[in-house]
Length: 110
Image (cartoon, rainbow, N blue to C red; front, side, top):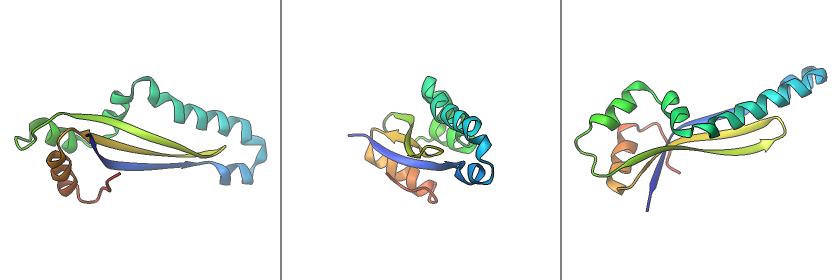
């Protein structure tokens, strides 16, 4: 069983901008769709680019890790002009996930 630990949550919402200027709906919707879809083309690279350098170093050099880990993200469309994305590290070993979670205490577990 894999264990996911979220390290970042992104909220994207353009509804206020459209309310201020309805003429921008088409442009903002296209930008929102692009923002939501482009990470799917290379998810590992997207998540790696979003991780802080010290997290990557920790994952690559920590001798206490026992198993493998993978990067991923979960997206939820919350409206025509909004979505939320969670970025996570998925561990094969539960103790690795716990160690990561305790080390990066300001993250929340899925």
